[in-house]
Image 1 (cartoon, rainbow, N blue to C red):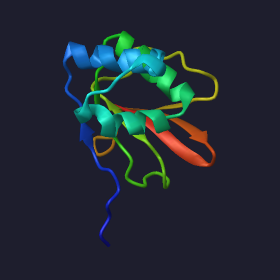
Image 2 (image 1 turned 120 degrees about the vertical axis):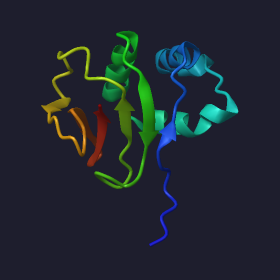
Image 3 (image 1 turned 90 degrees about the horizontal axis):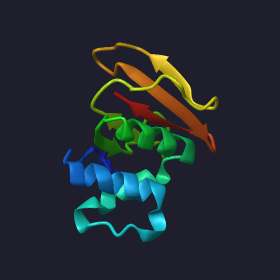
Image 4 (image 1 turned 30 degrees about the vertical axis):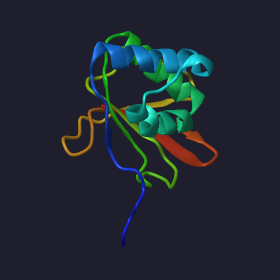
Length: 124
């Protein structure tokens, strides 16, 4: 099967890009992305608000966003954000589901949220 869905989109870990991510999440009306950022910004826009807040908090605490993808897993339309390190905080919105997995083939930790019957994830 020839699959043309968006795959991993690597994000430069520079301070400038991290700051631009924070500005986008805080105030998307005044954020003007660079051409190279358009693909992952589309995915970021699809990420549910509660997960965006969690992602912003992690970036603000020094964690780095490595990649975002939408490959049809775990559900069609799912967005998965990959962070460089374990979550800095363990206090999450009550609607977010946190799991500590320590699975060498998947991830150490996972936060999931279901919106419109689609599961979205932040993993590390």
